[in-house]
Length: 205
Image 1: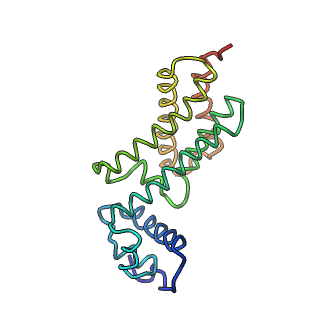
Image 2: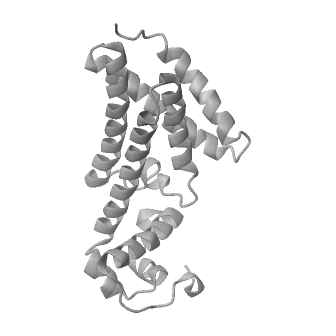
Image 3: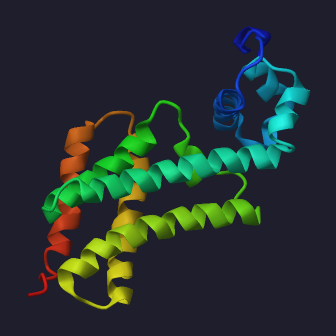
């Protein structure tokens, strides 16, 4: 990271504003080089603060990474929940959910890599968060499936995990295709794939 990329050092900011600034700088560094290659010096330079200021807010690189990961995981879960709540039409719910994953991976900040492509999944605290976001998304989808079908929770969770897994894997595949398929068309294709399976489970009377 060059000095030209670093922000000029500024005055004091309110604590929450400073924290947001540091997290933004950390996101840029972690996404660019991964956890292991990132240095707190680089993050401080990127934020335009001294390293002691950075350590006042985040006592270690791992704590900084986990704070950023928490915010990113919460963002995906909130997006999936919002997609499911956006309509009562189940086919449109599937479409909105697929779109939420496509939007998540295509965000210019690249933070999806912290969740789906972390180089620190051997760290238990990171693994726990990555697993938790998968379970929370599946739980949200399972709530809708179970309410509509009236089936056992275990079956609803299995179907939900399949839908969420399909959305995640195909969204990342779509991103790697470098725009050969537009986002709207990708949403349509994935919705068609998922809906043809899900509609085979009848709604409860």
